[in-house]
Length: 73
Image 1 (cartoon, rainbow, N blue to C red):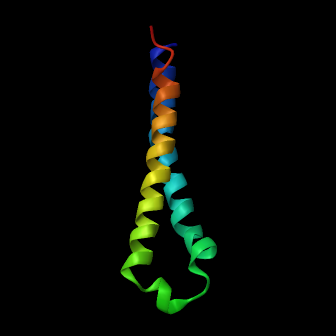
Image 2: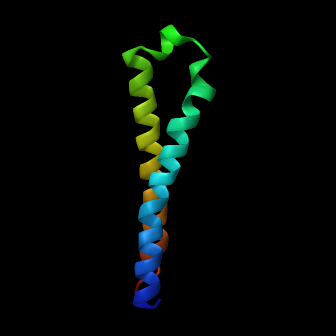
């Protein structure tokens, strides 16, 4: 793979987890909030939201980096 393509795909693989994490953060309330304001204001809910967002972002980053650098000999 050409060095320019590696750099471009690397930048995309770094930026994609930011977009995926933002999407998970915004849609977490819809899936797990259950429209309960008392539950959504708890520390447990906030930690679950941070944890899932970080987990999804790290998995997407790991997959992206393994695809970019996996074919190097």
